[in-house]
Structures are given as structure tokens and as C-alpha cells.
Image (cartoon, rainbow, N blue to C red):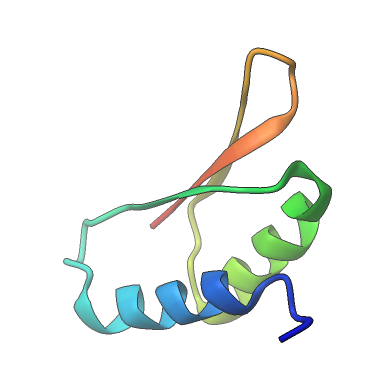
Length: 65
């Protein structure tokens, strides 16, 4: 599949069904897709979304709850 967000979407769907109410989800992300992944998480209903930078100051992790 040519959709670079496919796995993030599947994991987000799984988390929506299985994550505890106060649970958090963490992703290692490709920094080239940070805004698209953030939008996807918002569209899925996650409200608290943080991007975490790596040592090169690139967005490398996403935390969502």
C-alpha cells in the first residue's frame, strides 16, 4: 500500500478500542509526516497530542491520549 499512515491508523483504531481511559499511546514517527500523523490522531478523537524531538531536533515521537 502506498499510504504512509496506514499502520498509524490501524494502531490508533486498536487503541481506541483497547486503551484504558487514562492510557497513552506512543509512536516513533517519520518526521516528514509529523503534521499528517498529528491530524490523523486528532481526527480519530485523541485530544492530548505531543510531538517529542530527537537529538537532531526533529519530531521523532508522538504521544497521544
